[in-house]
Image: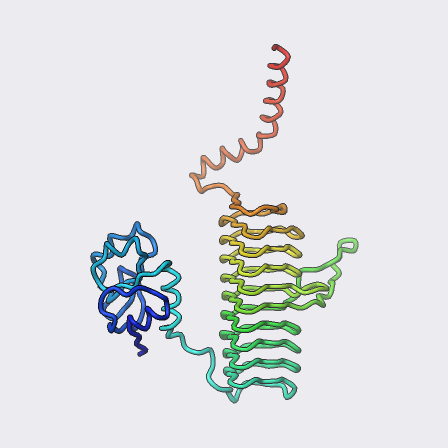
Length: 341
C-alpha cells in the first residue's frame, strides 16, 4: 500500500498545511465515506456541513472553507483539481498488460518499443509501430501501419483499424473501435453503392476515449481528434469529424460526418450534432441538445423539452404544430391594429 505524508502532498500541490504534516495518507474518498488514513475534499461550499461528521484523516479545502474545519487540512486554490492530482498519485488501477503474452500474434515487421506490454490473444499487424511503454490489453487488434505513441494504453478488446495514428499518453477503454468505415454510400436508382473510406484517423496526445465508442476513419482526408480531448462511453464520431483540443464529450453523443468542433468545448450527454457544420471554440452544449446549424459564438446552447406527464406532452405537441398558424394570425392582428391607428 502506497503512503504519502501531508508534507509531501503539500509540496506536490503547493498547498498550505494545517495540522500534522507527518500524517500518512493511503487513499482518497468522499467526505461522507472517508475513514482513517484517507484524504477527502470539499469542492462545493454547500456541502460544508459534512465537514463536522467526516472521518477523513485530512481534507482538501479552499481558503474560504478552511475556518470551518478544525482537523488536518491542505488549503489549496481548487480542491477538486488537487483531489484529482492526489488520486492520480495514489491510483491502484492495475496495468492493462504485463510483459508480452506468448499467445499474442505479432507480425515480424511490427516495431515494438522498449517496455511495451501486450496481453493474451492480442493481434499486432504488419507495419505497426508501438512506442515505448505502450500497454495493449488482452484481445486487442491493431491493424496495418497504425502507430500508437509512447505511454498510451488500450484496455481489453479495443480494435484499431489500419492507418490510425495515436499520440502519446492516450487511454482507450474496452470495446472501442477506431478507424471503422464511415457511412459513405451513393444511391443509384435505389441501390446503395459503397464509397471506400480511404482516409485514416489522427489522434493527438493525452486523449482519453471511453468504452464502446466508435470513431470512423475519413472518407478521403482524416478524422482528427486533437490533443487533450476526452470522450465518454458509447459516443459515435463519424468520418472526417474534427474535434479541437481539450474538448469534452459526454456519453451517448453523436457527431455526424464532416462536422468541426472547436477547442475547449463541452458537449453534454445524448447530444446530436448534424454533419458539415462548425461549432466555435468554448461552446457549452447542454445534454440532449440537437445542433442543426453552425454555432459561431462562444456560449451555452440548449434544446429539447423537459420531461412532463404524457397527457400534457401530447397537448403541447399539438400546440407546437399550431405555432405557424398562430404566428400568421398574430401578424394579421398586428397589421389590422396598425390600420386602425
